[in-house]
Structures are given as structure tokens and as C-alpha cells.
Length: 310
Image 1: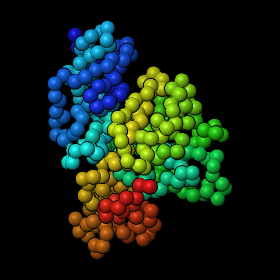
Image 2 (image 1 turned 180 degrees about the horizontal axis):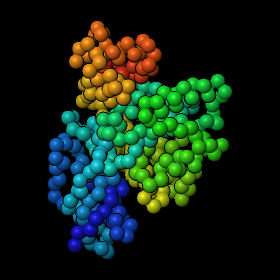
Image 3 (image 1 turned 90 degrees about the horizontal axis):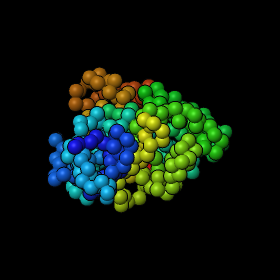
Image 4 (image 1 turned 120 degrees about the vertical axis):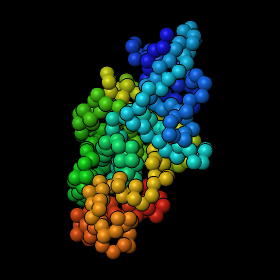
């Protein structure tokens, strides 16, 4: 008898599948080889996928996945091990949340913009949380407000938090409620601390969570889903900085900047790359200050292939 389940963890060959009916976790493997239509991927199933499976051995808690149900969306990144292929990170995500810090460590605007461009590619709503307010001196607050105004004006929800001073925690918890959220950010920005404050029973280890967007070499590509409360899940995952941009051309990157997308067909040339072409509406708006210079610089960096993600 086929049962319906939710994939909560992947280790490459085995999957933790949470049975929808009763919440029981089964250890499952795939039935034969799966091919994902239209995708060249190293793994056919991602955390967040809904599947149908059958129990292979109830005593050993083993099951076999026989069907992947249709996805609402998915997140993919370039495969570390196989050229020209992608690696599925997560599926059926309601929002992608970037936790950033202005000091200790400093999250660059280039990293923030690259993350937002990547999730625009996947049509997933983006949220930016500026954490560690307790470490900010007074002179940083106008800059913080400027950034929050900039990104909220582009349609991205922004929130400022401090686990130490208990600031913004109710809003953070409310943001997650009833959704499946992809959580990202550099190591050290306080992801695990924030989650542990609102869901102490999870007791996430700092290193375990902070390593999933480490700036170093990614030795693992396994993602995990955690249930915070009923119908509320977070997915932490490695390799988030590699999302989406590997095969994007200038036009696709520009379309992933909402403020540039709004100027579609406003340039003199319909194939304008917004770099040195005459009659470029994007450059005019940058000069007028209606497009932030930092955003335009991030765009140029991405088009030029530079790494602005530190």
C-alpha cells in the first residue's frame, strides 16, 4: 500500500520521509532510477519533496519511494562534483530567509544581492533579517535603516533582531509560522541562536547550522528540515552561495533585479546589457539615484563573473 510522505533529510542515497498521516519517520531509498523531467541533476529528490512510498520492512523502519509528487517550486545549485549538472537543494519552499549582520561578521551587500537574484530566479519570496542589533553602535543605525528602506522598497520584507536583547523575536517567529522557510547566511551570523530562542527543543548545534553557508569549500550538500511547530518548518542547507547564477546571462540577471525589470523595454536597444550602451534607462536611473548604486555595482559584478559574495 502506497503512503504519502514528506522528505525531511537527504544523505544522497537514503532519505528521511515523514509520513503525512501520523508523522512517523521512515528511512527510505529510491525504487530504481528516477529522472527529473527537464533537469540535469545529480539527485532526483530534495528536502521538501512530497513523495509516495511503500513500507519495505516495518521492523527495520525501511521504505521504498516510488513516486515524486509535482513540485510548486524548487531550489537548485551547480553540482560540485558533476560539470553541467545541478544539485537540488530544496523543494516546495514558501520563502527564503537571509540572516545578515553588519558587524562581526559583516555581510556584504554583494552577498545579499546575489542571494536575492538567485531566489528571484526560483520565484521564491525573499526576506532579509539583520541580526545582532546588540553589537551595533549608534552610528550604524542610520545605515541599517537605509538598507531596510532600500530592500523593503524593492519588495523584500526586512526585520532587525537581537537574540541577546530579545528584539524582533516575536516578529521572527510570526514570519515563520505556517510556512516552509529556507534559512541561509554566513557562518557566525547567529542563525542557530535565533532558531534556538524560539524553538529551544530543537537545540540546534551552532556549528551544524552555521556551516551550511560557510564561505569555505562545501564538503557536504545534504539539507535538513526541522519542524518548529505544526505546519511550520525550516530547511537549512549547504552551498547556498552557489545558487542560481552559474548559467545566467546578463539579461536573465537584470530581470532578477526588480528595479531593472520594471524598466524592461525602456532602453534604446532591446538587447541592452546596461553597461556601456547609449540610451540605457537603467544607467540613467542610477545617475538620478532612483536605482541604488550598490545594487548596480552588484549587477556589474555578477555579469562580470566576479565573486562579490564575501
